Image 1 (tube, helix red, strand yellow):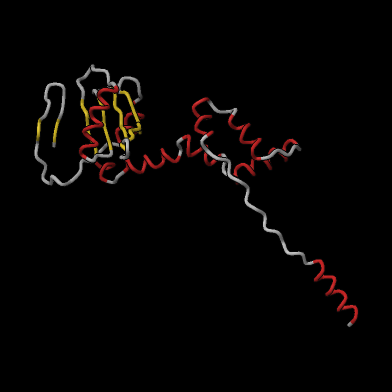
Image 2: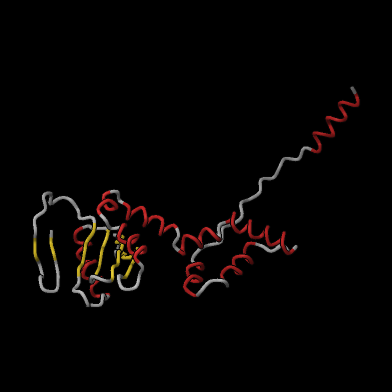
Length: 201
């Protein structure tokens, strides 16, 4: 186990099993030091080198939990944050529960992260402009107003409701093309032939 800090550049404590990867890389800053991008960059490099997926950055009163997605380049996104000076007791209890021993043992951070990603703007926007959703909106608009609009018009209307960042994200999502309708075989002639046969018999 390696511990890094302002006054201790590299303190090493051996682990029982050196092959095991750390679950969370923790960066503790001195109380009173404001957390910065520099601190996050520092602990991120430690996490990447150790193959660690989670980061906890704190100065004693401000706490931040980050997720590391390994790629080229690696991507770091915040999962949660809280402040001992600003948040209420009940809120703090819920926040600290996600990093307690039981939560880490049962991989709760990953479960929370999956839910966060599902509810991310990109995921929600993709669901909103899905073919079935656009059809439902079109149908409801016609029902409520008596006016028929198409999916592209609904898409444009939705984009006007969004802020600039969300609108940019939405512009990267393609409008799904409506599925081709399967033409039903003509059975008119067969019915006429059947009627003629019945009449002659």
